Image (tube, rainbow, N blue to C red):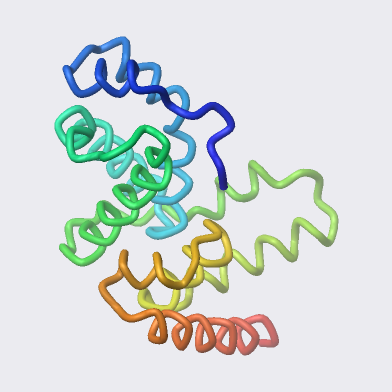
Length: 176
């Protein structure tokens, strides 16, 4: 997904220098992306909010490692993914608040399409973490297998295999 309004070098410099107005501008533009990624990974609104907070608190210091403004959105997405994975692995999750309520609130109408979407989201939440991570990154975030492998510390081939297993398990989950 391409950023409709690419971040410019001046805003990046202001962000790196810790200016509150720059952080607010970046938050306004990108908080939804970070929250969605975190929610899809954790399935918990409370954890997604904590991840969102952690990403933006660390952003002014971390942005200095960014090479070019054009790569800000993918870099920020990777930062959100890594933060979510660390949270899941650390075991410091807050009490689980199912994402189902958020899904229901965002679903338009009560037709069969909304029901199918809720069933799919529930099935994705039931996937084991390694499979869910690859599925979310590939099918929802649209990342290529090479980048998924880099994010997860696995090979491109392993990310493809996990995607294949995720799809197979989803088919089984959706049939039952």
